[in-house]
Length: 97
Image 1 (cartoon, helix red, strand yellow):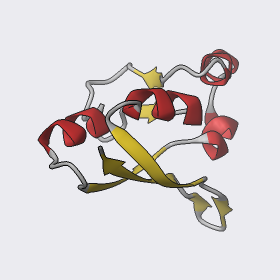
Image 2: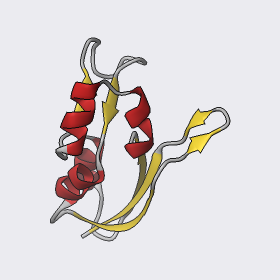
Image 3: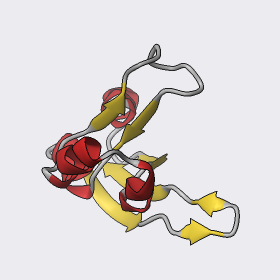
């Protein structure tokens, strides 16, 4: 996961900003994906090669918090919202500890 890699190469005190597909994207998930998401697990659509433009992953808040535990402090999380053009991604700002 990107935040893990970023925390490995960042100095202590570094600020890490990234976006993820969060709760607002549940409306495009399948029932099975929603169940996996609601259990706090990372959901991936792995029918394509990771990194391909249509590869998709959905990250619940609890997953993100576990992912950075002991590596980064969460400074800010702003949940994505529905927009006129679609949905915005969740914004995360972490500080490397």
